[in-house]
Image: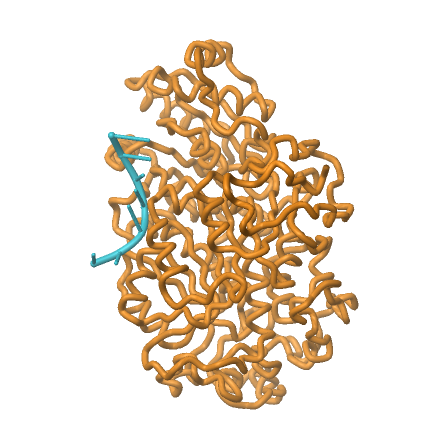
Length: 615
DNA sequence: AAAAAAT
C-alpha cells in the first residue's frame, strides 16, 4: 500500500529517527502540495538570500541558524533534527509526554487542507489575499532604543526553512508593515508594544518570531520538576474572546505546520477535558482566553515557568472586558518569568492610561510600534450613515438586503454583518430575518460556544450570508469577504464603531459600512462626523447639524489629536506622529530616538522630552 | 447599559 511518496519519506533522512520524526512513515497524511514531490528537493524558489542573513544586531544569536542546517531538513519532516523544539532527541521528553507511545500514531492534521475545501464561497482568488499595494502608504512609527531596522521581504529574515515553506503555503508574498517592523524587533529578543489591528497581519507578526525562536532553542535549559499531567508551554498568547483565540490558533497551526512546534488552544465554553488532553500531549504555544487559563493554572495543569514568549493580543479590549485582574494574576502572580527574562509582545488598538500601566509592568526596554490603521475608517471602506427611526430599522434593513441581492452576483447574498446592541436584539432580529426569507444566523454571548462556532462557520461559508452580532464579533475577527457591515444599532463609543466597520474592507479589499442613526445616537454624532471627514467620506448635512448640536460645550471626541490613521494615538507627544500617508517611511533611520527610556519613565505617561523617530 | 469571560 505504500505509495511512491511514502516510500520516499521512508528513505528520507530522519534525524535521530525517533519520536515525531519517524512517525511520518506511518499513516501520515501528505498534503496535496507535497505529493509527487521529491522530499529532499529544495523549494524551487528558495531564495539565496536566506543564506547567512542575520540581523545586524542579534545579541541572542537568533539569526545564527545556518542555511546548511536548514536545508538538511527536507520539507517532509519536522525539523526535530535541527534542535527541534521538543519531544525528540536528548532531554526533551520532559514536556509532558505522558503517553509518549501515543505520539507515534499521532499525525499532524494539515491545517491548509480546509482552505481548499471551504474557502471559495464566491469563487474568489487567493485565500489570504492581502492587497499589498494598499499597504504601501500606511504610516508607521517606531521609537525606543536601538530599534532594529525593518525588512522588506521575508527572505531577509532568517526564520528557517520550515517556516518559510509555511509562509509560501499561506501565500504570503511580502510582509505587511507590522510584520516588516515587528518581526525583526522580536527576533532580536526585544519587548514590543504595538498598535496594529488584526487585519494587518498582526498574528503572523508575533507568531513567526515565537515559532522561530522555539525551533531554534536548544531546549538545554533547566528542566521543570517532573510534574505528571502538567503542561509547560514556552509561549503564551492571550486574547479577549474565544473566537479570536480560535482564530489565532488556526493561524498559528498553519505557521507551525511540520515545524515540530505544537500549538494548543484553551478557552471557556468548550469541554475542558479535551483541552486537558491536548495539553497533556505537549504544548509549545498555548493560545488562551484569560478565564480558562486561570482555571487551568488553578488546577495545576499548566505551569508558566517555562514561558519565554508572552503575547497579549487586543490588550485594550481585554481591559475593557474587565480581565485586568486575571491578566495580572497570570502574568505577575503565577510562576511566569519576569519581564526581561521572558519576551513580551503587547498589542493594543488604543493606549489609554491602563494600557500604559500594563506596559510599564509587563515590558522591559521595549520598542514602541504604531502602524496606521488598515481596513478601518480608511478610504477602503465606504461609510454611509442613514437616518432611521427605531421603528423603521427592520424594514430599512430589508430594503438594503434586497438591493444587495439585486446588485449582487448570481442573486447571491453578499456576506453581511449586522451589529446590534443587545443579545436579545440579536436573537429577535435573526428570527425576524429568517421568517422573512433571509438566511441569517447570529453570534452573541448568550449562545453556546457550539452555536457560536457553528454560526461563524455557516456565515463564512456563505450558507447563511447574514450574521447578526453583538460586539463579541466587533474586534479582531477576521472574516474574509465581508462585503457589508450594517450598524443596525450604533455603538456609543466611536472606537467600537471603527472596529465594527473594520470587519469589512479587510486585507485591502473594499467594503461598505452602513449605519442607522437616530436621536438615540446623538452622542456619537460629533465623533462619527469627524471620523468620516477624516477618512474622506461624505458627511450628510443632517449629521453635521446633529454634531454641532450635540457638541455644544464639550467635545465628545476623545483622544483628539492624532486622527484616524493610527488606532492608538501617540500618547507621548501629540505632534510626534507623522501623518503624511503616502510618504516612504521605510527608508531606515529608526534609531534616531535616544531620549526615550521605557521603564520607570512612566509617572504620568511618557515624558514630554520623548521624541518620535520622525522628529 | 451591554457585552464578554471559568463553572
